[in-house]
Image (cartoon, rainbow, N blue to C red; front, side, top):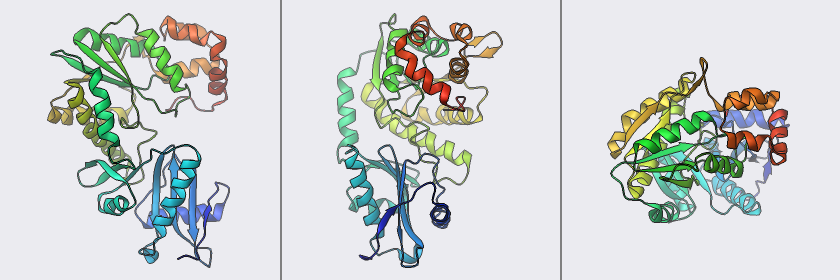
Length: 348
């Protein structure tokens, strides 16, 4: 094993990528759509026998050929990926693994955050990372008999988002508003947060939160353990609900608001699971019909397309003045250029 070298697998390396797909498939893993870096260990005949990847600060798609397990290859892959992450300045790392593999990663210094149905385990390399996160939330806890939560990406903040926030704020004593803080969107987090805060500044019962690493979005959630798309949605929802239940307990949250998505089967399934499972944590899930302009629902995808097309007349009908003013300012030029250079702005 000590003679095996670890090397980068580049996207242009057709042979290695074919082997990577074959290795992952043999180990019951699908290649994740979100990968920034992949490495591999090859034997003397240049056959791929172990691999690992990362996206952001999450390690993923970790696999060792069944014929080489027990040789310490995964330890070598993890050590390499951690070194690469540390060189990027990422010291707080996460991974998702199958339940029957979690003990192995515990021995490598990872700790369980939560487990879903003894199938999927979410882990981090800090013993008290999640508990410290919950403790940090406590000072923002507010008294109230009706305490709600909203989680949004707001890419960018729209009249639809505003409608949802105003409804939740109006119907509850306190609203905890979590803004997804990962930078995996066309509109950077710093801008998304600024537009959310400015667009809701007239509401006095909102507590704003950066989501941090524990509220999981589509971009960070691993799809590589699930056999089909519906399993991915279910796994994502169950992991989200399990973690959110602990966050809600820390803040006294008893309602969670979600936006209806009539054009997305994915979101519909996700919302149905939330409505079914959140009550087990003492949380009522309220699904709110989307705000419309004319006969169409307002969506962030439509807004990004309008920005890409330079259709600011349409934009006026879709976003609050605070969002519109930002996109008319010089500050927005880099973001607008990024959107215009993106081939498909309809999806996440």
